[in-house]
Image (tube, rainbow, N blue to C red; front, top):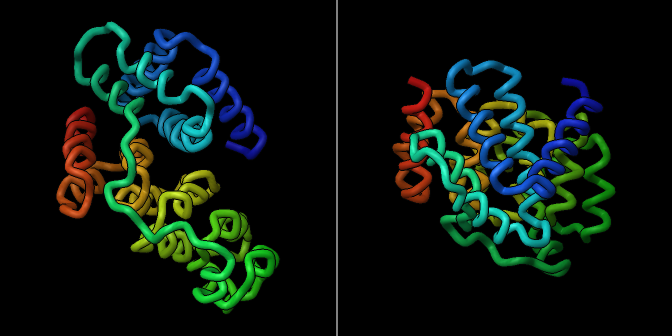
Length: 236
């Protein structure tokens, strides 16, 4: 899927989430999950990954909570897929509270660079700067790093696995091209400082092996571990 296709798919998904009636959204999601669990088709997996990406922005829209409640309350067959659709539209906070929101002064104490300098350095190709900036307390700096061609998958795994942290520093990873990498999605899902509902949406796109690991991780939200088992069971 090329970049223009991805932008079109994300725009279409956002339109669906914000404009369709709750019943239509529920039916659309039911069909997506049913088709994915039946075939594990790469294109259907790509759609779920893009949907997890879009949910980061959708969660910030006005009326998000009321809309999710309406979708959750839709009358439907109470089978396993319908229950998983309802789970997708349930919002859970992060299981653990991370480092508090920090200001410029704290940033300088952490990595000795003001925010504006961090942003500029994140656009360059300097390995030493990048290794420091991976610890940046600013989401916009992390977002720039994720888009830098010099950034490596090991860097993403480091940032996705960072503890303690805060949800705002992990969301830029979810909305980067790196979200396509299964190891990055797993590292995010396994981080108790990521919003649990985001972790759950990542879990829908993971393999049997990754879901088994999530289900055994005691540091994660008990509901996430239980849902990982239920998602895994749908693969048959």
